[in-house]
Length: 161
Figure 1 (cartoon, rainbow, N blue to C red):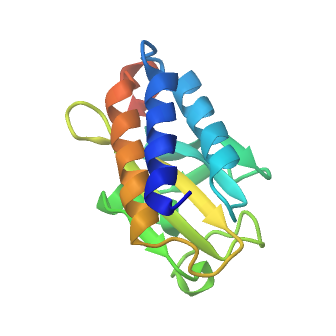
Figure 2: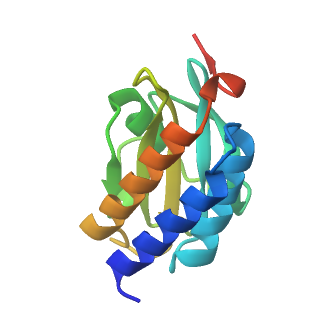
């Protein structure tokens, strides 16, 4: 299966999993499990959601993770703060990188939004392979982030200040 077919399958499956469910918790949990099952060469897949002035750990697959991330720290903080996808080929060269898992060498983080367009969290996927994520991954995961952003009623989970 090529990358486009993979992400078509992933997003079709994600849409089916979230259909009829508006609560973010089961939707994010199933999404993390789906990423873990389908994406190769990753060592962490999950979510952080806004909690006041920072991010708090949400559903994930992989090793234990940092529980809270300030918006001025790490790749996840940058994605939420700047409302911009962060595709990092070498996390060790990223200023302020937070090493939750020393095996991670590359990372992609995508913002999630509520119906008003406000950032409510981030989707975070790590890999032990340097430069693991390319434009094809970014495009496929952008579709997944948009799908999750629209599927969830974020007021049921996220505390925004």
